[in-house]
Image (cartoon, rainbow, N blue to C red; front, side, top):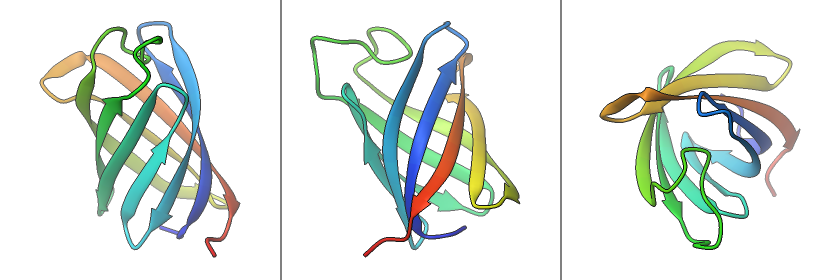
Length: 108
C-alpha cells in the first residue's frame, strides 16, 4: 500500500456519511474529521481502525457510540492509488461501513 495523504469518504448502513483525511505511513493509519479521530494498522488486506469521538456536539456515522473499533477488509485491487475498505464495528456486525480512499499526495 502506498504511503501518502488520502481523502476518506464514509458511507454507513445507518444512512449516514462523512468525510475525513488520513495518512498512511509504513502500514500505520492516522486521521480525523470534524467529529472523530482514527488510528490503526494495516496487516495484509486488513485494517483495524480505532475511532474516538472528540467533538461531543456531533455524532459519528454510527450515532452516539463514543469509541469503537472497525474491522475493515481492504480491496487491494488499486485503481491508480485509490482504495476501498469495507467492514463493520467490532462485535456489532450489523453496523457496516464502506470507506473510499483517494490518494492526494506523497507525505513530506
